[in-house]
Amino acid sequence: MLPPELPPLPALTRAEGELIDRYLEVADLLGRINPAYHGDTYRGLRAAQALVAKAVALRDALELMHQRGEAEVHAHTLARALRVLDGERRTARVTVPREPAG
Image 1 (spheres, rainbow, N blue to C red):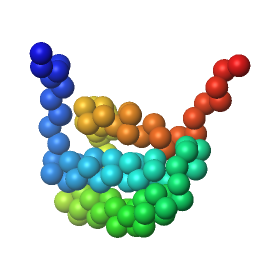
Image 2 (image 1 turned 120 degrees about the horizontal axis):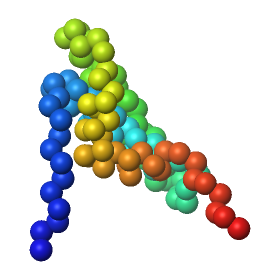
Image 3 (image 1 turned 180 degrees about the horizontal axis):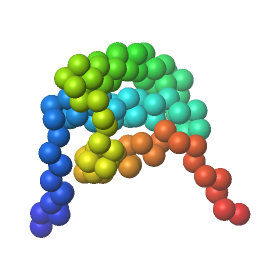
Image 4 (image 1 turned 180 degrees about the vertical axis):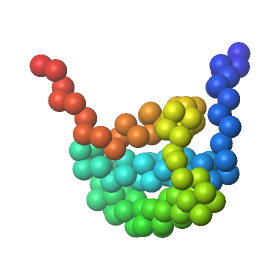
C-alpha cells in the first residue's frame, strides 16, 4: 500500500523556494540546539557551528529576492509550502515544550 500523496507545492519563484529551503535548514539546526530538549553538548555545538553557514545562506536567499524586486513575502503561499514540506513538525523543536499535565 502506497502512502498518501502529499498536496502539491504551491507555485514558487526560485528565490522563494530557496528561502523556504534555507529557513527549514536553520529551523532544523535550532531544534538541535534547543536547550529545552535532551541532548548532548557536542551535538548542540556541531549544530551551532553549522548554523552560521546556514544563516548566511538564508540571508543570501532573502537578499536575492530583494534584488529581483520580490519585495513582499507572500505569507499564505509560503506557509502552504512549509506545511507540504513538514515545516510544522520541523519547527516544533524550536519552541519550549509545554509542561506535562499533572
